[in-house]
Image 1 (spheres, rainbow, N blue to C red):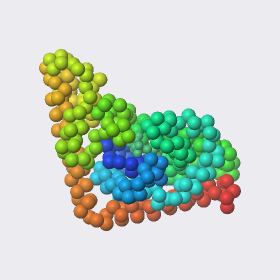
Image 2: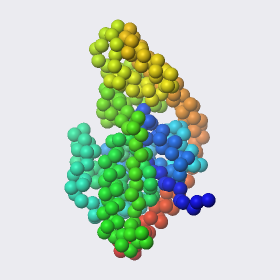
Image 3: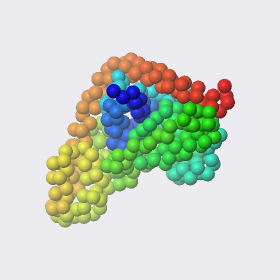
Length: 332
Ligand code: TYM
């Protein structure tokens, strides 16, 4: 027997729109698989969404929908904790404390801030210090592993840098010389950047998303509008360069993938046919989750009860960690 503590797994998703294929394969599927490996905590990042969403009804509505989608995708509330970010307001206190040691230069190098400005989001202090709040989200649960897509990699690096800064500045009194553990990003190579219909990273803000719980007609329309090159039907096509093939590889069996690869390399099949095949597979792949989603929706109080239980557990851990942090910095 070993008395080693189970690892703690944590991740979050912004309630800024409908769940798309990129979110699912980049984060949700790995997060659901990790439920079996330790104590998993997953949250709906509503504080973060405030940096881009200024519609209170939409924020509330989206937050419930993300909870519903996560549960439909296999999050098991008996194994994992699902909660709303804003149900643990201590996280904003930790963000403030972290911001007092966060070097400006570190945040100025953050890609996501620059990307968001380029997309027209207002340059607010909240948007700039987003990585500090994200570091607090992770550190406040003593997280070991953080399953995310590649676009979040730099944020986890910043989190580690801030944990080291805190340990160096205030950790001397702690038993092992540190206040925080250093969390690790868990990024699956095969799904680190799922492409959207234009071949760029799939993202709601780029308008290239395929939503997984949209209606059938809409999913078909999105798949049929995947951008392709102008290779004629009879010529062979390169599967490695094809968004259709990349997406198909996520949802088809090994044999089906091999068969599509062969047809790409043989020539004689147009992109339209490949798109139809992709749509059929995508629709079929998410069918059990759509069914589960309907079942959850039928039970009006289920989501609220899951979130309530989740908030209680998240608060329990956050309170313990904050006690340690407040003592270490001299606030108590
Ligand atoms: P968000 O809400 O943009 O995305 C949620 C998760 O989905 C992943 N993802 C993708 N992965 C692969 N390919 C894609 N095209 C794709 N699009 C999205 C993201 O990498 C992410 O894992 N800042 C975070 C939310 C957050 C968080 C945290 C995550 C807040 N605090 C603490 C982990 C730990 C975000 O905006 O993700």
